[in-house]
Image (cartoon, rainbow, N blue to C red):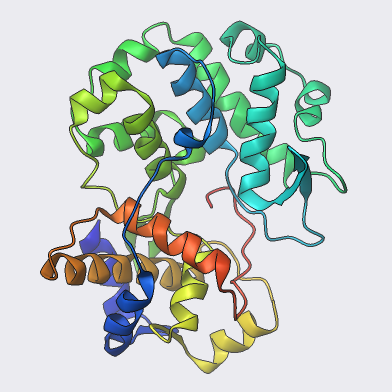
Length: 307
C-alpha cells in the first residue's frame, strides 16, 4: 500500500509534503502510548460478541463534520462526532441484553435503529447510509454460518483486511487516481485492528498488525497542515479555508488522503531510527488524539461513507 500512496505523492498537483518539519512534529508528539478503546469499557462479552460489536461500530464510523454537530449525552457528558457514535452503541449494549444477538439485529427496523442514536439535538448525519451499512454487516453474518470459523482461520493482518473488503462492499474504500487504484480502506483498517485486540483467537493467529497503514480521515490532514508538513496549493487552500465541499474521489481529496498516509510512514520510520517502534495504526491514533486537542485550521469536507 505504501507504494500506492507514493504514486499519488509523486504525481500530486494540489498537495505536497514538507519533510523539514518532521523532527519538530516528532518532538511535539510526546509519549508514544497506545490503548485500545475496549480497555475503557466494563463489558462482560463473549469473544463472538466483541467481534460483532466491532463490526457494528466500524460499519457506521464515518463523516461527522456536518453542522450543527450531532451530540449525545452519556454518563452526564456531552459527546459529539465518532465518539458519540461509539457511545451510542455502547449505551445500547449496556441497556439492551439482546442487542448483540444476531437474530435480534436481523429484525431491527429503521424506527428501532434510529432510537439507538437518541441525541440532545439533531439527527445523526447520513442516517440512511449508516442503516444500510449496518444491515449489510448484520445480513452477511446472519446468513453465513461459517462466519466466525472463517475469521478464526485467517493468519495475517493483510488477509483479514482483504476478507473484510471482499465481503463487505461498504468497507471497500478505494479510489482511481491517474489510472491507478489506490486502496485506502480506512474503516477496514480500524476493524482489522479492533479484531486483533478484541479476539484472543485472532490475536494469536495474526501475531501483529504491523502491515496495516494509517487511517485516512479528516482530522489528521488538518494536524499535518497545522504543523506545515502537509502543504496545500492556493486553489485547494481556498476551498478548505472557506469550508467548501470536496467531492469524493476528486483528485484533491485523493491527494490529501494519500499524502497524509505517506507522512504517517515517514514519521514511523523516523521514530524507528530513534529506537521507538510503533505501527502505523498506533501512530495514527496518537496523532488523531493530538489533533483533537489542538485544532487551528479547517478539515476538508467530503460527504462519504468511507471515512
